[in-house]
Image (tube, rainbow, N blue to C red; front, side, top):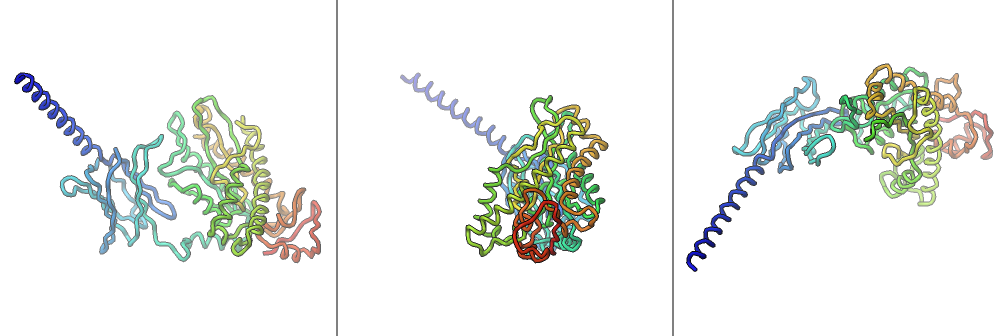
Length: 442
């Protein structure tokens, strides 16, 4: 009995020692798990974003200090093994990034600022391209109503010149590279180059003006892209992407417009959102309108927008077909967020499959990028010429009536009231005829 008791005690001691050993290993792994392995930053017109690549989830706190202004980030039990990137000397917000040990165990990161600002931080889970990330957003001071003066100036100028404004959206950007090709080609880089080439073509066309939603390598949220187009009073929205598929044989371009289901869900969202209700939809504020009238006005705007979107999409697809194989022979419909503006006709162009080796090589070519931009531009220009008198340099003061047009739809499309439209054209009834040219009042 004594021998059994001794053996039992020995086993208990061995078990305890084993558990202590495992706990020690576990604690060591936990202590060494939190490390900053990379640091990337992007500056966009409305913020600077720093993305810290971390080996595992971590605990942190952020606060600001004055005299001089600084942002301080304390990260518990972390080590810094990344390279601090060099900031441009003329950076408007941040002058320097530095790091050091705190309490012999924690990490302290400090951003020396050029002005007092408030930070925003959050953690991101791993995705196909990156592991765990800690994101720090630094926002500059905003002007009245939260609109930067540059955007307000652009909007005022565009209204004064009465040009047909095309918002050009290069997909992805910043920490979101999009799809990747076999040679490491990143979608975000290719589509930005195409977007800039398209913008150049649009700006050379009398009566048209381009607004780049993203002009550099930084990320913009999907709904924010739509909001930026609205802030610029865009008349049309083009989102440019490069497709990808697990089977590298997939190839060709496609053009998308918003699906009926996507349009219906967005209409419901607008009617339910008080902020949207007070905004201009097709030139008419929904604020103060009863539910039925607001719904009718919004449906008119959405229907006119869908018609214009489909028209342009078909023209762009026809021109892309001239460059080679198209993946889908007809205009496709999907619920993409960037296509959901109820009063801005919008299309999304999948230029090619970056996952296809041959098409990846083409997408890397500046000459082929130019061909894609020209194909999209020809579709836009064709639609633009069908909507206005070709000899006029003012895109918005004339409109040629086409089959299916109604006075209400034309008024919504050009942001004017039916009453003003009738008065400008001495129209007494709702009758209009195909080919008739209407004056569009300012």
